[in-house]
Image (tube, rainbow over all chains, first blue to last red; front, side):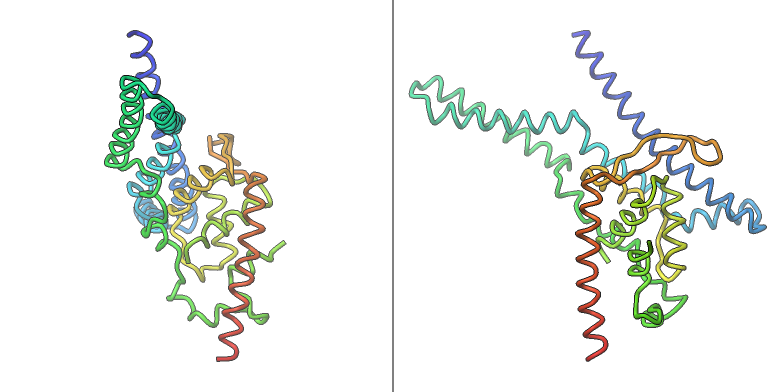
Length: 168
Length: 102
């Protein structure tokens, strides 16, 4: 019992460390952005506003990062592997056994991972819920205020992205 | 422009390990404000790429002696960069050809 509680607290501490790490990382970026704007002789308020504007919605970004970290948490990965293993064992037991009692054990081994999988899915821990988030896809777009699309090409008809790729 | 941000990050990290702010600065310098990149959007992309094994991260000291997380390209990431860059070349050549002829 004590060991289980220790594991639970360790896991909680690990999870909060991840949140702290993300906070620290994002704050570091925001502070450097603010410093950069302060060097352009902006007031502190203006520099903070400019940094926030350039960075985007901090809370949304933090949530996205946390969600990605959580789904790749070793515990979750191990749990998913265990569920798949249990499911496969259940199928083997169900196919190979002739006795009624053993077949029921097989049914149970099949049912448990299915129910757990549904629960994980309902709690939004399925991989598909994180793939290709439209909000992040929109975060990179052409800056229409600077130049129209076609003048973004240089003399060699290279786009800015191509220039970055070919830049040695 | 889905996938473009990942390509830009992979290319930026192909020279050196960098923290998120450094990556953002490098991309802004390279695209000369022709593309709008929200700096914060780099982070979910970086975390996804780390999850896929394209990059790794380690905490270290930044140039101003602050604790910062540095990202580094892995061998798998380098392969991904080669494949995505080749893909980009093909797509952009095709689009350029259409724009020039249509």
